[in-house]
Length: 93
Length: 321
Image (cartoon, rainbow over all chains, first blue to last red; front, side, top):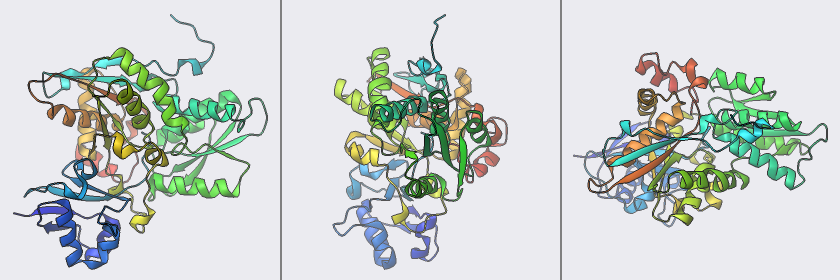
């Protein structure tokens, strides 16, 4: 059973227009690595040269921002939903 | 009844009410701090007053001097609060506002005497921030207080909201608020951690990046300078996303305890419930959550009356948080 990766509009052109991709991997880092292997054009949009997350990319596993769960080391389980979201200016909060 | 010399004296000292009837666990108390009780109707009253007072202290604004103009990007509440403060202080305010905010926000800005400059709805708050920067560069004579970077924003919460919470709820174990500019979380979070280090600070945010279609690449993204300056990644314990359906469901559920609140507060309540679910059964916890504003500004969204599927679909094109 694979986890599901949701791709935001701004990144879809780099993954053939897909909004959802089935992914395998035990950690967020493994999932993103697998994604960049299949879609090399997305690499610079996801990770910095040192393997850390792009500063304007938020990655959520289910509801949680992985930066507070160990970053790229955060664990992924089958059936997890991984959501990539660009960091944008917040609203009225 | 108390008597006050100015409406500005009514800002702060907001009440906290127990909403634990909605808690998923009997060992977890949830308390809501009602920021809609501020005179211009939201938590942003604290920030607006602090921004203006800091500028006056620094000599950037001069009370009583004619023809002083401010410009500020806002999706609503900061603009409304700033408009109220500016009118009382005699300043003219231009608010850069995305076109797709709820119409009530637009009307309240006009009611308080602000001038509205439209920014692209598809670019959301990002677009408002960008346009405000451009206009500020073209008009250096306008004062740009820039709530996303101004230290007076978290300072307002460090010196008022945080101390109020600890005075009223000394047993607080968790604090939950929305991210936005990050001013509330950075200011309250830092105060609570300094005075009660065991307190966990949880941030809630909507999936704004799904809604904003105007981004060309990730490099058009934005992290508030306040968040970076205050080492937000180290300060926060958790950051959770709350989607529009959950936000609206919990906005509706809060009416079960008599609270008619804005949709962002429904999202924060959803975050507080996620937080409560993670508390061990054998432990007691007290969560304080921020209710940013009341529901009046959101009636046109149909959030309480329309079919929830319709409201969720509408949420894709309207900024209501």
